[in-house]
Image (cartoon, rainbow, N blue to C red; front, side, top):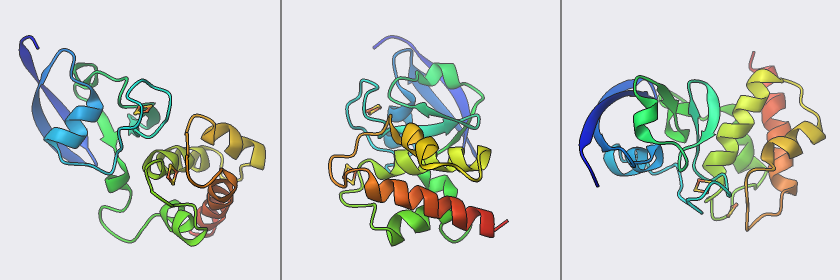
Length: 160
Ligand code: FES
Ligand code: FES
């Protein structure tokens, strides 16, 4: 496992110090050290999108990210989206549009979708499809997820 080193992370606005090995992934730190189990481990090889979190404001696959590379970084997980209040519009839309079945893909999709809408408040269907293309959902097909993201975009515009 090798020698451990201490890193600091700001996760969902909270400062953490964690001891990690050189090969520890950010996903493992989030789930095992910080107990933020909303971020899911699907494939563990970068192909499903379930482990997507925001790293310094950009969606990234936490299963492919070494924790040591994140020293001093800001991380946002699904738990951080509604930490101090009601659900984010995008979370609400996924529920209302029935886009959540087993929920395994949901956190990653919502993190990706929120980033899309924050940067492109009025996305086209094509923009949404492209954004969701890195996320595998085995349950719903993608129709409901696309509807949810479009609705989440609308709700986000209305809330601003
Ligand atoms: S668990 Fe990271 S991409 Fe699948
Ligand atoms: S809701 Fe089950 S994998 Fe997407």
